[in-house]
Image 1 (cartoon, rainbow, N blue to C red):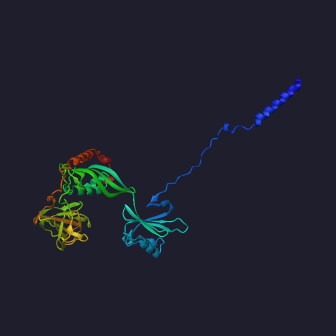
Image 2 (image 1 turned 90 degrees about the vertical axis):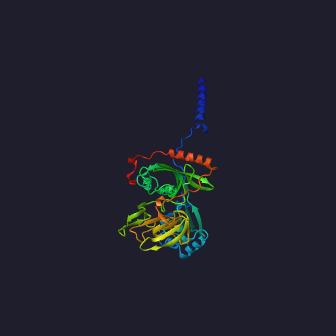
Image 3 (image 1 turned 180 degrees about the horizontal axis):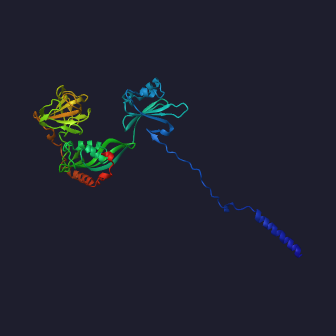
Length: 427
């Protein structure tokens, strides 16, 4: 019997073991395998230029050459004369295709097919605006604007020879010097700057696609010159933004200090000057400004052109402007006159009336500028200039708040870099 029980027990134990071995395991209890992710979906950023996805096309950039037209450019890129004509018709009311100018940038977008086709032609009118010629389907012509950015900057420096060179020395766009000359032009003679004159400027400069443009907005400036400090405080009065002194007087006078953006004075007012051509001494009742041929010449104040002519053995091409019953100015040796200028023309202050040249009796390009007070020649560098309307009594409290803020802002400009830390290329 014991042997029989032992056999039964052994048989039951075997069955139990088989059940344990082959019973299905609970899947929830199984440990999860670690999965290593090796592939990821890359999201490609679409880059646009002129509103066109540039990665989808081959782009040919260029500049309009002299005597090139829309037709000559596009015909080189596979368009027929008829297609160019149809495109010109589509452009009417949007852009006159005859106004394409040499030197302007353009871009041609071509498809990447086995037989490439020109899809877009883009013409840049200026750094800010462009015209898109869509050559697909029924053709379409639209205008666009590049995004503009204004960057705030500041500079503080010392003049050693000229403001232009000083701007370069302190790694600032030298064209800012022209802007300052226009702002302070009624109170400071920029042809007579002295060593150690100091300037401070807080300004904004316009940028497009990371490239700087020659467009500035001066938020405040000061200039220490000849033991005096001059401030330029921007303030809006009667809907007009002008620059004022710290006392609220307008910096704009009835006359500019000089009739052109500053270059150098080659000869001053004198009653006895040795003439370089005639080789003798005689009076020179004017100021000679040496400047490259073609430099714009401005009327120093509003007035009327009363004489225009040519003196072969004298002033060459010249203009005479009468400003009022007291003052008349003369501009001589011009290479040419501004378009539309004639006797009787009304001109405004800072209006271009001609261009520097060497016509008449001249050894090189310069402007001989003369001023007459009640018909008598006077030194142009000492001409009186009455300022425009000052800040009114009612606006003075608001002006003082702006003034204090601007002066504080200028005082906080950090000192320029030491002399030996500036790249020699700026000298």
